[in-house]
Length: 393
Image 1 (cartoon, rainbow, N blue to C red):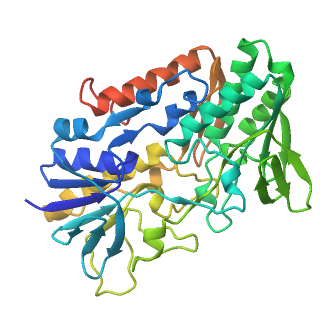
Image 2 (cartoon, rainbow, N blue to C red; image 1 turned 90 degrees about the vertical axis):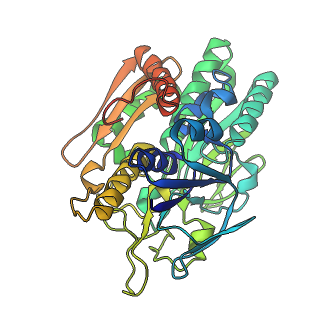
């Protein structure tokens, strides 16, 4: 039985482990935390609609259900040439295939320590919850939410959760009857944040901001963050008592220091089948990269999302099986590139979809919030094998 080593316990890594085990490979999953974190539903932790435990699944429980080996440790270095991975507490060099799914690092901004991110380390959601509690107790204030971009890779932006958390906070303040005491502002360095969702979605988002009385501060590059605000390239300042900022993705530090081929942003170069592309023919052909750690090629509006990571993972499981059986019917991810999300607002949601043929967004009052809540339950219990997986999800 061939041994497959997977680095990373997020959407891509876990999905790869599940599907490779279904093909009866000997699978070892390495994760630097002992739980799988459901990022899309973490938006409700800061507003206390969900507990931290609601968006976590114990990896040991998943290990028991799916039968993969589990190592809780951090990856320190990868040597593709030596077929070796060094962890903090051991070295692994006896694998037949390596699947890298370690996610991305974040762009470094001066003063970033003065912000918190809903897309950062999971523990930051609890710090955000504390911040929300504090500013509600204060009774008034300026609250600023935003996200940034990576000029070296436009697919590495992640703004949706920022919109969602802001809309949920707006809803919470209204429920408490204190919304008029707060100035809410969304900021971004690009002139039209959300444009990648399509023209209809961009227009609807603008109307949404106006209806909710949320200020916009777009089109100015961020110079640095301070405790009481954001400084922009023209030295203007946006006052803020509480700043939530999602930096764009950047190449993982371990990956940048490896012998893997990288794009200008530090993401691993792969082909459509997620094979790592080496120029040197003497380098190994047994390495795959999936999820945020990989360079996502394709349309200008493309964006790294969890469902694309899972498509990559399923395809890699299929492709390794094909390769082992001497077949060549490999599956690629490019045909599946789209933007798909239910953008939650606390009292409803909007369904967003875009592919190379169409782009649309339509509101789902109330029922949309229930749908996203339901997806969170489905995600948790389907991965634990307690309910069936829906084909294509």
